[in-house]
Length: 120
Image (cartoon, rainbow, N blue to C red; front, side, top):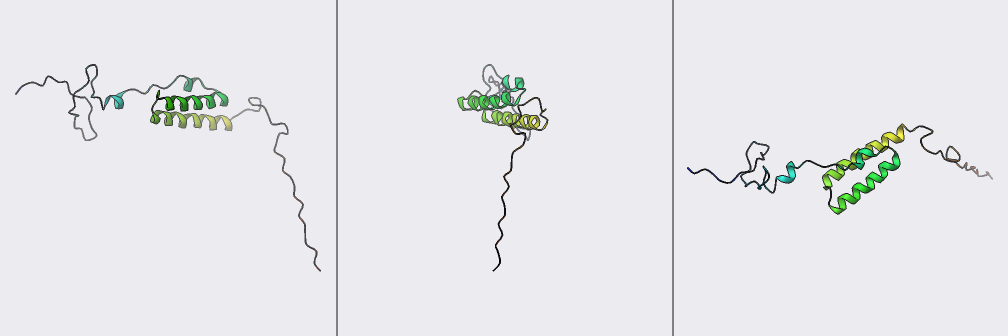
């Protein structure tokens, strides 16, 4: 039996079988599995966001990065989910001095006077 000169892909399926495709020259994986095993690079602006405004800008930048192809849709979805959780947490725990208050403090409700029919 001759030794195989090709380096095979190191990916293993869920059942333990090994991929039989040849690995790329500078990688341990084939062209199909390099994307699976590539570490996700999360943009720095996701970690730098501290205020609601910063988080909203991070949402916008994530959408732009996804549309331009800089990050995958899967990673963008995970970032959207995490940023949404942070925004909800900030809105629940917001201090009175952190955000400007509305002019009236509360929304005014208009009272509607009920009219009754006079019986004949």
